[in-house]
Image 1 (cartoon, rainbow, N blue to C red):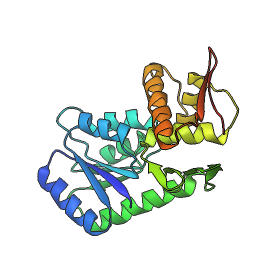
Image 2: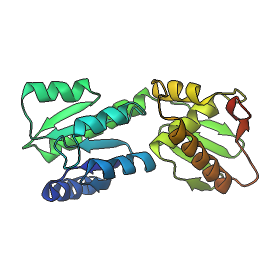
Image 3: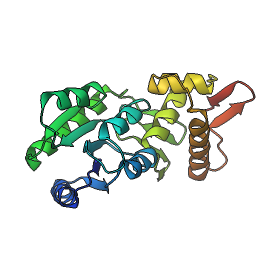
Image 4: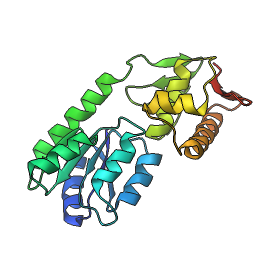
Length: 224
């Protein structure tokens, strides 16, 4: 099932979007503020974000810029700002599409579906399997035998990167720059916390198999 996050401070817009997208087979999460949206983006495995520009706590442009530093998650702006300058800014800052209000729900769904399809086509298509551990980029899923675990978008990106290079040691800086194509700046702490969560989830999923190991003063490696 495709999972979409709708971000808008208009409850009517959120309700209408949720009803339509759920009828089309999506799982829909909603947020009314940029802060709540970022919390969901950081912790949930999403396929796309539909993002309003005018949010109560900060601009959707600012949120988009931060998210784009860390992931290629598709972002579709949905905004009442219809002038060319606003559309150009949204696309230039990292948005994948820009839909103006008022809008057709059917057209919005088609644009979201198109961005999800394009994003998945850009991902490495080959699943990775190490014994009973299966990491599938197409569905962004992680399973061990008949059991599975939920990884957020960011967590999956890091795990998949390490698993693609078994036995190689990567520092925080290398992981950050290779996964998100961005200098790490102040992101060391958040990446440390993320790796701890990944290791905990893997240990719960497959006890006794410590797939991600620490090399003191050097970094981390995936051990199949």
